[in-house]
Length: 132
Image (cartoon, helix red, strand yellow):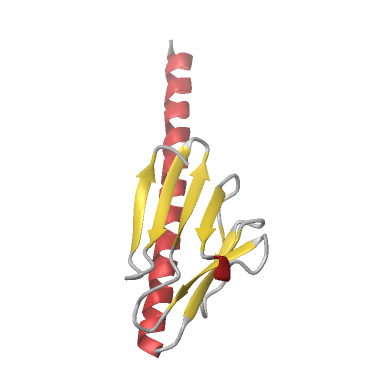
């Protein structure tokens, strides 16, 4: 009986750990996007956050590259002008706060978090999603 209970607790903790990892990675990417937008407004010049879908990383202006946790996937929908290669895509923010817009979906196990970037306002919103 005790072994079954221990296995159940370990399974639940594993699921909880995965949920925590994807939530933290999503919030970190949202923070990097908001930082990039604020830099564009403060400096009165375009700023771009770049995402590499092959090595599952992103880089904000003046910040070190961030690599997503192992096993996490991401999908990016961005303006054609912000896709310099099949491996990379970006989100450009302008001095008025607007952006090129798009969406990032982070996938970890069966959990999905979606980040929407509005083109007109540059607003960045995070949603827990149930499907890709």
